[in-house]
Length: 341
Image (cartoon, rainbow, N blue to C red):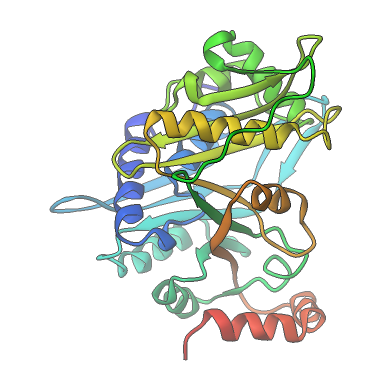
C-alpha cells in the first residue's frame, strides 16, 4: 500500500505545531495520541499498511490550525509471527486549541457522519472538564471496563532534567549506542524483537525517519555482547518547548528483568539534556493491574501529571451494565473525581 494521499507529512507537522501550542498553554490538555512524538510515530510506522483505513480533517481559524480529528477505522494487519491481527474498534483521536474548545462539537459530528457504526470510541484527558461535558452531550460515556483498575488506559508522566544524576552502567559486555551507528533495518529489527509479534517493517522505519522531529542521535539502543540489539527507544525533542518524549520504549523479550531498560532511559535522558531538553515526558499504562512499565518510569524519576479517560458512544448494553456493577465503588469514585459538578 502507498498510504493515504490526503494525509501527508505536512498535515502531521501542522498537528504537531498545535501540540506545541497546547503544551505551552495547557500541557495537561494534550491528548494521549496528540503529542509531537506520538503523532510522528503513529503516522510514520502505520501510514503504508493502515493508512487506507484512516480519515482525517483539519479545522483552521485566522491564526492557523485550531483543531483536528483522526479516525482509525477497523483494520487487519500481518504481524511478524505470520498471523493477522484484527482490530474491530473505531477510534477517534483529536486535539483542539484551548481557546477553541467548541470545535470538539464539530469534530464529534464529523466523527458520527464518517463512522456511523455503533461503538465509536474516543479518549480525553481527565483534566479537560469542558471536553467531558461535550462528550456527554453527544452521547458518550466513560467505558467502565476500559477505564477500570485492569483497563488499558494511559497516564502521562514527566520529570525535569535539571537534576539528572549520573547514568547506570550497562552490564559487562553490553554497550550503549545511537541509530547514527546503525543501518535503519537493524533499528527496525530491534523494535520487532522488543514488541514481538509486531507489524513494524523496514519500510515503516524509513517513514518514521522522515517525520519531524526524528533525530538518529536521539534514537538510542543497547547492544548485547553478541551484537544483538536488546533495548530501544526514540526521543522526540522540541527545541521551542524544551520538552522531549520517549516513544516507543521496548526491551527484547529474551533480555528483560536485567536492568537494561533503566540503563537505556537514563542514557536517553542524558542525550536529550545535551540536546537542550529541560523536561522529559513518557506515557504508560496507568491501571493498577499493569505495573511493570509504570514502576520502571517511577524508578528513574518520572511522576504522573495527567491520565486519559476512555469513552464509548451508545446506549448501555447489558454487558456494559454488568461491567459497571463489577467496577462498583471504584468507578463511582472515578466519576466523582473527574466530572465537576
